[in-house]
Image 1: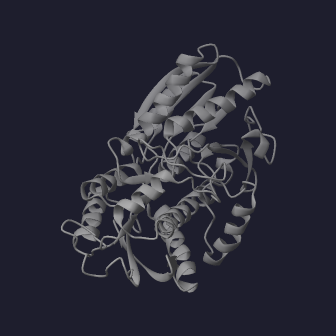
Image 2: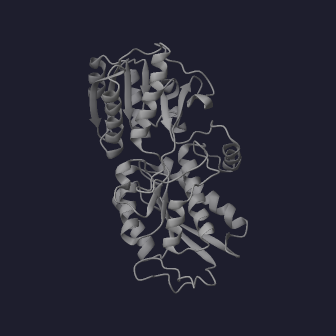
Length: 401
């Protein structure tokens, strides 16, 4: 006979329902930044979780074996604070007796959540943390976002195509600025790896870290100005990207190639920066311009929220799909069975590049390819990489005016 459902230490939910009959309801927990610095992505992820689960419940519930099970989702606001999020996940497990966990957003926060997940041996699916440092010594959490070093490598691979087309110089002189976090350090390390592997193509002329939620990047930008770089490659959060790019324009800086890592086409940034964000290049985990029926179908569904269809939302949707898909496939909410199913399955029909997600068996992190976009005038953008998915021709070097 299958074991009873257990939620936390001592099996807090063991009495709720024996697995033989199966529970009538499966309880999920997620802490998200619904206020504070990360409230925009947090709200998009909340809407994605809620919409996916509403679809399941509207269809009578999740089919687990021969029984339809309702899904109950408890979402709490971590106020964009990592320590608070860690405490909330502990509360979900030890007091609320949730069965399974969905993840939050931002490297520092997700790191805390994953520590709790591993301590209590709880399945966790997250679409909000890409730093590979999160997944060191991890056995229970999975992350949908491919590593940041791969983001940097993807951009350098694209730059090579532009060098070979005679559009960018060899070697390309690069100024690197990165947020002072493991996310930023991995971006910088990825550029450094590219320089070491191809010194004929890449020459780093400046590397500078900056603190999160900065208000004044003038001194950093003056160093960038003095460095004489061809390209300025930054890793930043959305708010820092908006602030820095505003000051970049005010100081009259120009580079042939400009990126803020995964940032660029976000609606909040385009609205704030207007034409100051034209031509900026981003490498990201998902873009709504990607081809494929799965993406088209999701976009139609997502329209009902009125939200911009950004990668935060797609990552939230995929997280809920995989977590509940694992329950269905395992025909159980036994934690070990659900965990093993998540880790050992190739999740097809995905919105993400390549159309399927497989988690690394050692780390639990996905390794999907990135897509690259370039902002175009009028608040639009094009896909520029991979080449077989491009929806337009990149404008490189950037126009001087």
